[in-house]
Length: 285
Image 1 (cartoon, rainbow, N blue to C red):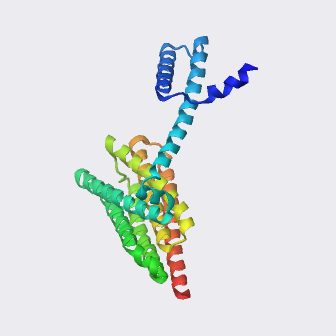
Image 2 (cartoon, rainbow, N blue to C red):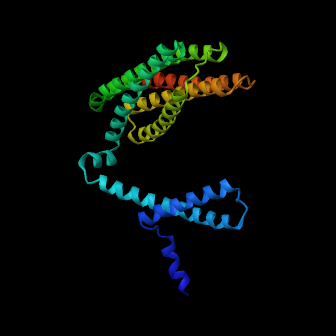
Image 3 (cartoon, rainbow, N blue to C red):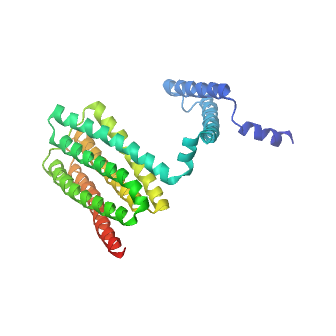
């Protein structure tokens, strides 16, 4: 009868010094098992059990720490506003994305000059114009709250600009896929490009959720810009990784061409929807 009473205590995460000790013991034990080739020996199963228990406790403790941190952030007016007001959170995210896009476009421009790469230069121009679209939307936010027709015109303008940029990226992508001019990233740059791509995919998903809540043309346009940037970054990263690690594999060409067509198709569809939808709504108003 004593075991059930003790079970909940085992499931409670220990204090941080004890948890850090468990992590060190688990990591050291696993390193000893795999370095010695003892993965099937009977002591290894005890280490596996300890590692599994440590992982669960670390996850539970991490969740509790995040909850406490979030509760602490609510004590400050600015962070409380960020956590509770969707419109303010969207504006902050738009400003952050603008800064990151400007930095990334400058990085691409430097790479285009340093490695004499038209692909890097074209992408730098693409991200500069996307950053300009974000700045345009930020400038339009105060007026859009007062004038719905103005926000629809901004929404339609961004759709037209996205359409022009899609044509430019299609031309450069064609040269990269079929002309054999895909960029070859140096080691440090390919990791930076991968980190930027994953960030843009996360930002696009978060922007999609926010725009469904806010139902604002300006925020919807910002979501479209985020998604276009994420998809372009994904296509660029895939092309570069295939050029670096794909060798002479026969599947490189169809894989790059398929991804490029899918990305351009999605961006083209978004552009046309923004143009047609914005025009219809402006006329309706």
